Image (cartoon, rainbow, N blue to C red):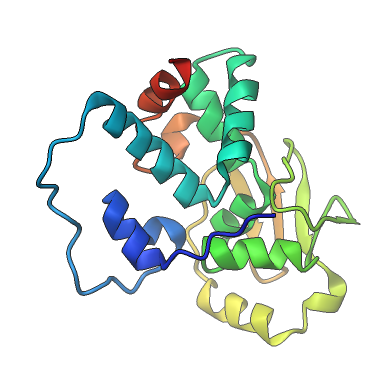
Length: 197
């Protein structure tokens, strides 16, 4: 399992995105780069793909797999690709407020702190379905980590397609997100063009 060890602020600056999309609220002192050289069409497409992979913390092989699945789904391929990434368990943990950053969400899942419909799941890429209930395991609830998360995220503004109960460390997936529900700054059309070549 490949884990990105890139410094978050440095990589975010290089891709021209805010670290806030990964859950980091303390902004770096340095501004986002002002690109001197103009990128080619291929370069722009590749950068959009790299942005999406970095935000969701997925490898090239995983991302390509999501693209292949998205091409077989009804609707626009680019939108389906982003929605598949949003349905990852580690993303749900981040979006619902059960973790403060995307990397912390991945670690929480990997360490087996979460259950889906009562069954322990330790696979960050686990794909949730409508109606799934994600909870912090009973044994993990008393840990210092989740006490801090409850304090920090007590008034967490959760996305519309999830019902989050931070006090009880419980999340319900009401529906799948639409592209309008997803706030990441990625032009998925360019990713589709990149893979279509």
